[in-house]
Length: 513
Image (cartoon, rainbow, N blue to C red; front, side, top):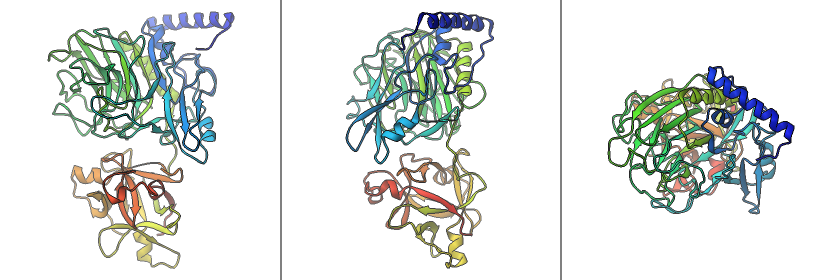
C-alpha cells in the first residue's frame, strides 16, 4: 500500500469516521470513479461497515480510494518480457495506455492480477488440479471496456484460462462468515464448469461438500428446474452450483445485462444469500436468503480459503466468462453495505466500446484477411449457405443485396445481435453443425440461440469479431470461403489456428444495397 504523510493519514481517518457515521444513519453517498483520487471505493465502504476486504482484484480500477499500486501484469509474446498496469491516479481507473504501448505490434497475456489489500493475495495462472492440467493466461486485449469514460481491459476467460492463489492469507476458513462480489458480463457466458470467483480448496481438488464457497456465473443448471436460460448468479459450494436453498430455486431468474454485479455471502454455519443486479443501473435483487443446503457437509461450511478465478475448485476449466472486479471479506456484510457497494459500482460507469453493430443498422461485413479484403459475408443465391465472395460497384443488385445485412436485437439475447438478410426478410444467419446458413426463424429457442452473435473487438486487433452466443469460444470465421463458427484450435478443419484471428475479424462496411 502507499506510504502516506501524517497530515494525509489524519484526513483519511476523519473521512473514515465520517463514512462510518453516514453508514449508521443510512446516508452513504457514493461518488463516481474518475482519474482523480476518489473519496471512497468498495473496500473503503466495506471497511467502514466493519467488514474489510481480505482480497480485492480488478484489472479495471482501484478498489480503495488510496490505492495506486499495480493492478495487473502482462507478458509480451514477442520477447517474453513483463510490465504492470496501475491506475491513472490513486483510486482511479487503470492506465490502459501502458498496456497498449507495451503490447503494440504483438500480443500480450495477463499473467498476474494483484491483490490490492495488504494480504497480497495475488492471482497467478492456475496450475494443474484434480480435473485438469495447468491453465493458460487470458489474452490481455480481448476485453476492452470503459470505466468512467476511461479505457480499461477486463479479464476474458475462455475455456482453459484460469487464475488461483492456494496460499491466500486472511480469507475465510472452516465455518467463518464470508462475503464476495464480482462484476462480470451477462453476454460472455456458457454452460461449462465453472466460471467462479472466490473461496476454494488449497490443493486444487474436490475435497467434498462445503469445502468452497465461490460465486458462480453462467448458464449451467446443475439443479433443475431453473428459470429461463440464464445466466444465473449461483453459489459454488462444491459438488453443486446452488441457485438457492438445496439447489433448485426458480425465483433466481438470472441476469443477461452487459455488466452484472454478482453477490454470494454466508454466515458459514447456517445461512447463505445470493444477489445480483445490473452494474450500470439500479439496485441488487435478492434471489435467495435462507438456510444452507441440508445435505451433509454444507452446514457448517468447511471452507479452505484459497482464491480461484475462472475455474472450479478442482480446476474444471470448460467455462467462459468476463471478470472486471471482485472482492472477498472474512465477515458477512449487511444488506445495507451490499447496496452501498452496488451504488459505487454503478457510479463507476462501466460501458462497452461503441460498435456499428447496433439495432437498425444496415451494413455489409468485409473480410480483413490479406487474401480476401475484397470479399464480403453473403448468402449464396444458389443455396442457403453463408460464404464470402467479392462484391464491387459493378456487381448485380442481387449480389449486392445478398451481401447486405440488417442488424436486429439478438433473437436470444437483446444485448447481442442477429443478422437478417436485406434480400430475404425474416431469414437470419445461423449456425448448424458449426457451418453458417441463411434460414427463416422457426420460433424455437435453439434457432434463436444459433442466430445470436455478440460483437466485440476484432480477434486480430482490427475491426470486430462476432461471438456465437451458445458457443462462446467460437466466432464467425471464413475458411476456404465458407462461413463457420470456429474456435482458435480444435478437431475441425475450420478451427485451424493459422489465420484464425484475421479470418474471424471483420469490418463493418457501408451497405452495398
